[in-house]
Length: 375
Ligand SMILES: NC(=O)c1ccc[n+]([C@@H]2O[C@H](COP(=O)([O-])OP(=O)(O)OC[C@H]3O[C@@H](n4cnc5c(N)ncnc54)[C@H](O)[C@@H]3O)[C@@H](O)[C@H]2O)c1
Image (cartoon, rainbow, N blue to C red; front, side):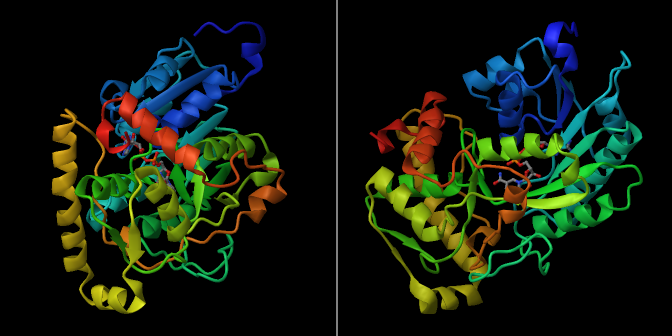
């Protein structure tokens, strides 16, 4: 890569899992704000089949961006992902890669999260990377009343969180690794497929069905959120500060989002009615959660397919499928004050209708969402 002028002083960044939701937004943030001299994206999924929108595609095609295909579970592939033939190495490495699909078996997460992250962190130490950022998750403990702090009690309540916590512990044992762990809340924004996407799709399905949407538990269930742009800004913020080394930070907006606040926005967009089953009905449901989850998914998947067909959406990566864990009555309630104390300021302090609307507008532009449901 030809470096010239100011560029030579700017960092070279390796983004693992760069074709994913957070990864692609990070590449776009760094390149469009001219923060870096060079970015290498590594992913097992090539950009051509990653459902990038046209803006992300244009960024991926910039001369300062390179794509390298690698399966990071494999240590030889991992070595290749880091390898710099011209001797110039990485200032910062951000690990956005990992198994994020729900309903997988333990061995899949052990390899796809624990082994992957330990592999890449070991390479980052070997290459003496100035700062390695690991994306963990916020589901480390559930409490409705007390927002969880980074050093609070740990009781991971999703299987992904269980393995992410093991990664957090392993990173401490890698000699020479300069790292920061970030634990984001539910991340939403352009390209979202798993954060708020299932709730958006389910709102659309009830519009299609012309029925009242029924939700488990209550509106007070905490589902704290953060916009993807603030996750990208937080990554860049910690990369550039030595006082964040070897620490863990929650990344969460200040809106204290709940199931109620999110549902109110979705219902407003699709102009649908909704109500809650309440705690007694929900507790009955909990005794056989697996059946409830099957029923919920049966109820949504067929109308979703119908609505897509009706509007000529033949192929879409979006699915309203909700895993059992997504339907638990567990609170994602995070305290973001530690990151704020390092000087980090949110650019989007709370979830608002316009941000959900722009996700849907992008889906429609990409022809992956039935347009008639928002008309
Ligand atoms: N999206 C959220 O709401 C959210 C919230 C908290 C934490 N996180 C964490 O942030 C990280 C990124 O999340 P995301 O939403 O962008 O997920 P994503 O699934 O959209 O992206 C992950 C990327 O990693 C790649 N990948 C997976 N396994 C790989 C392998 N073996 N080798 C190479 N590439 C591989 C995938 O192909 C994908 O492009 C994940 O660790 C996730 O757990 C996400």
